[in-house]
Image (cartoon, rainbow, N blue to C red; front, top):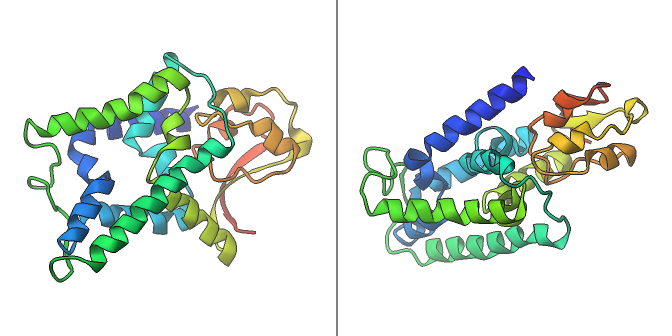
Length: 243
C-alpha cells in the first residue's frame, strides 16, 4: 500500500498548505481579475489543470487537491457512497455559468489585459490578513458540511468548479487519441470481492465497470486505490494510448 500512503500524505500536506494556496484555486478571483483585465494566478492554475488533464486525467483531484484531502479525512465520520446520476451534472451547470461570467468580464474589462500570478496575494501568500480567514473558513465549511452529512467526496461529485476542466481535458485526449493515464481491467481475473469498491474514495462501483468493460469515466480521479487493493491484479494503472 506504499503508493496509497504517499498519495494520502500528499493530500494532507496540500490541505495544510491551503491557507497559502486558496487564492490560486479561487473562481471568484478569476472573475475579479477579469474585470480589471488581469490574468490571475488562479486563471493560470486552472489552465494548467486543463492542459495537464489531457495526459493525466483528474490526477490533481486524487493526489493534490486540499479539499479532496479534507473529505478523505472525513471518511471516518461518514463513508456513505453518494448517489450517482443527474446530480453529477450540477457541477457542470455551475461551471457553465461561471465560465460565461469570466468571458463577459474580460470582454467588458476596464483595462488592457495583463498577467499577475500573485494577484490579491501578499508575497504569494493567500491568507495574510485576519479578515481573510472568514472567507477561508467559509470555503472549508462549504466542503466539510456536505461531506459529513452525505458521504464520500460529495463536493467532488456534485459541486466542484475545477473538475469540469479536467473532464474536458480527458475528453480532448480521447478525441485526439493521445497517450494518457488510464486504469484498465482484465475482466477474467475479477472475482467480485468488491475490495475495489470499498476502497474507491469516489465511491464508484468498480466491479460493475470491470464486469461491463466500461471506461472508468469522468468521476475517476486516477488515485489508483482500486489497483492497489485488488488481490488478483485485475486492474492496472499507467500511461496508455487513448482509444
